[in-house]
Image (cartoon, helix red, strand yellow):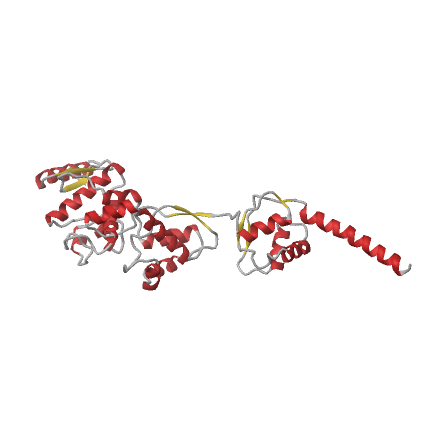
Length: 332
């Protein structure tokens, strides 16, 4: 075979193999879309190709690597937990990895009325973030300042909600998300209301935490807030049980008389005014109640035995309500 024939054969082979390559590159592959594919942070391009091939997302590692390099995307592929559509060609896969889209997000639920200690434990149970890292960061002055806050702790500043997060979210990113969500609750209108009340965000969150700790009934939140504001205006001790629950080491539990004598600035049976800060992390409903309390002349309330409370204007009325509650408890 002369050189001319050899060149023609080689050209034909290039055309054929090139055409096959183009076909394999742009022809969609059917994969198991129900199985998330994890691309760990720091994985090399060859490693990514191997993972995609193992999960059946691509047919050819070599063509994926070549297409990624030719398209200039090799340095832009993002880590994550991906849920790829069922049928994809290599360019589609590269686009998804470059944009970081189609992430298989995880859900994290933060419940109302929990302390940071409790939230940290529940986050650890739901996603892979150690509880100790959450607790440590929540008291770290530098981290708190980076969130735009000047407080000793993030207690009260973590908004209870269900969050969709990336599988590899860090403790700092998770906490920052919770704090930002809480700050966003304070809209311009609510901030104006806060200023009109002569209260800071810290004070509103502190009051909201007392409301959150006292009742789970939406219809009572504004009434409870009104009682506490009435007592503040009269210079009365708040005598708020949630503040005692916050300082006992084995709470939450049924409070005992000896608990009321614990010497702590959070003990509102001993020290007047609001406690130094929130005693839990309140939800939006309790924050609204703290901003817009019900206007009334109640000064007392006690459980009514059915999940709600009885509100009283005088100590005599209150004592009768307490006696009625104790009778209910004895008869159970």
